[in-house]
Amino acid sequence: MLATDQDRLNCFMHGLKRRNPHQPQFHQAVYEVAMDIIPFIQDRPIYQRHRVIERLTEPDRIVIFRVNWEDDQGNFRANRGYRIQQSNAIGPYKGGIRFHKEVSLDTLKFLAFEQTLKNALTGLPMGGAKGGANFNPKGKSEGEVMCFCQRFMAVLAHHIGPNTDIPAGDIGVGAREVSYMFGQYKHMVNQFTGALTGKGLSYGGSLIRTEATGYGAVYLLENMLKHHGHELEGRTVLVSGSGNVAQYTVEKLIELGGKVIAMSDSSGTIHEPGGITAEKLEWIKELKNIRRGRLEEYAEEFQANYYPQKRPWQIPCDIAIPCATQNEISSEDAKTLIANGCMAVVEGANMPTVQEGINAYLAAGILYGPSKAANAGGVAVSGLEMTQNSMRLSWSRNDLDQKLHSIMHNIHEQCVEYGQDGDDINYRKGANIAGFIRVADALVACGNI
Ligand code: NDP
Image (tube, rainbow, N blue to C red):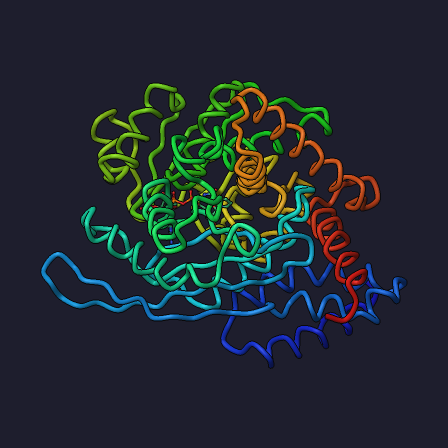
């Protein structure tokens, strides 16, 4: 980067931090984009005149609300709910809902910003949003989770709709929670519309939505490997997390001949040097989705290695796919992965690698698939769920899988087109610029609104 670009970046970030104090994750997400966009717009005055980067980093609106609910002991409880409507430049606001004890305005702002560019990359007409609450679903009864979801939606319903804003799941919000929220929404507006995605199949959901984020990440990985003359077959893979994204990442990896040697949850990591089989993965799905247990139980059941309070990144591997949470790969972890011979990192989770870690991947020349490209398959199939709801029809599993394949291939091609860096492809730069152009052109076309 030229010194002047660095000056412009510093100046822009200085203003952003001043306007958004105490939001380090939001700063991190914007910096990662601005470092590619600020040099890109230097000889494109139209984007400067329309202040596109400034407008894109300022959400259209933020709704913050109190959620009152009652626990099983009859205690009144209060949590804080949020919806960040980041940009509807290319379509209605769209993005997941996260229930986690650490949810904050900072976290949701970074996610809504990322979501806007990710949704643009899919090529579908979806704006960007994110929402959630600092509600910890762990240890809550079925009744408490239902009560919370209903109370959360009782407020959120006033701000969403099938042509306005369409939420979906994220950490702590799976099929069960989406269903409770959809039920509440339907009850309030007295209309059966596709105002949420990730719904159950019997009431407007789409086939392969559950699998889409994980499958999509592996499809992007396949494209990246193929483009560089490599194959997935026989490669050892570390996957962090054991929730929705991790489970279906592992499922697709196994199907395509990858050897998954580790998974994790927020309590620790399991290590299976021989590889997690399809049967053992089914056991994990039952443990996590039905019994809502801990991975430690897997280690006891199958005599696998278990590392309490550890992430998987110390284990030598060919490929790493973080699928748990933000900043789960530190700078040291990234260096360890590289030193141990890792050839590719593909991000199923949102912003799982700290900035210095990304710099280390790029400096080492390993393949790096950033989250906004790698995990876009989930929202892409959500977009297809919206289309099916509007048309009142359901596509087959095969049709949807082909569409997902083609969307992930297109995302790869956009990264290649805009990410050329000498003889290398910088997928971060490619994804940032390709997503930016689509949103920026729409903002410019619609004028100063
Ligand atoms: P889930 O809630 O289904 O699973 C999350 C997994 O990550 C769990 O195994 C959880 O452990 C672990 N985890 C959560 N927080 C932490 C933490 N602070 N430290 C260590 N482990 C943690 O969520 P998803 O699989 O849906 O989401 C995972 C990531 O993928 C997130 O970054 C999300 O934003 C992103 N994503 C999800 C999409 C989707 O379609 N669901 C779409 C695009 C991105 P435990 O079991 O102990 O809770």
